[in-house]
Length: 304
Image (cartoon, rainbow, N blue to C red):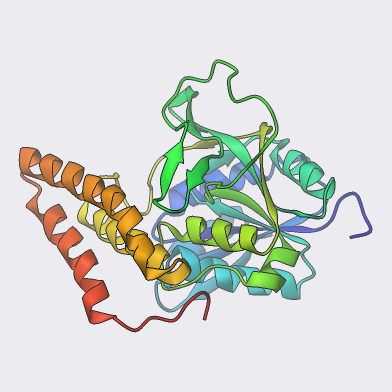
C-alpha cells in the first residue's frame, strides 16, 4: 500500500435515523486517524435525514437512494464510491454506534501488519452498559452456525483483551481491506440485512484472508436503531430466512441437516416468546421467512 496511513472510507447507512446518525458522525470528528472520509448512504428516508445532517456535517459525502436497499445494498453502493475515490480500506459502521478516537488507527495498524488480514473488528460495548460486551469477535462452526464461547452479554473482566484471529466479526463496525472486495466482492444483496456478515466472513476465509479481533479498538453500540428491538416480525423474518439462505448459498444441500437443529431452536424459542407475550405476528413472520425458500427454489450462489 505504500503508506503507514492508507486512505479509509467510512460508510454509514441511514434510514430514518437522523438523530442517531448525527451522534455517530459527531464521534467521527474525534478520530485521530489522518486520512479518512465519510460516506452516508441514505436508504430513501422519509424524515428529511439528509437535509438535517447536512446542516451539521456538510463535509460528509451523501448518497441518496430512491429506495431502501438495505444494509447490504447500501454498503455496496458506498463501497463502490469509496473504491472509485481511492480508498484502501472500507469501514462499515452502524449509524447507532459511537467510536473511540483511537479506533480507526488501531484497526488499520493491525491490518497493515499482515497483507493476508482481510477484516479487523473492535471490541464493542453496550452504550448504556459500558462494561458489558456487545461484540468481541467470535469462533463459529459454519456447519451449523453454532458459536463457540459466546461473548455477547458478558461483563468485561479482561478476558477478551488479546489480539486474536477469529472466524467471525460483527459488521456493525468492520474494517475491510480493499483486496477482499476486489477478490470476492462485498455483500450479497439477497440477504438485505442479518447473516450477511456471516456470509462475507465465510467467503473471505475461503479466499485465504484472515479475520482479526483487536480489543484495543473500542466502540459503543446504542441499540437496534433501524430494525427496532430484537423481538419483532421484521427481525424474525430475516433471521430465519437468512440462516437457511446462508446454507443454500455456501454449503452442500445436505448441510441443511446440520443447521436444522440451530434453526429449530431459534424457531422454538421465538414461538414460546411470541405465545407468552401475545406477539403472534412474529410466528407469522418466521413462517413467511421459511416460505420464501419454497417460492425461490432456484437461487444464485454467491454474489451476483
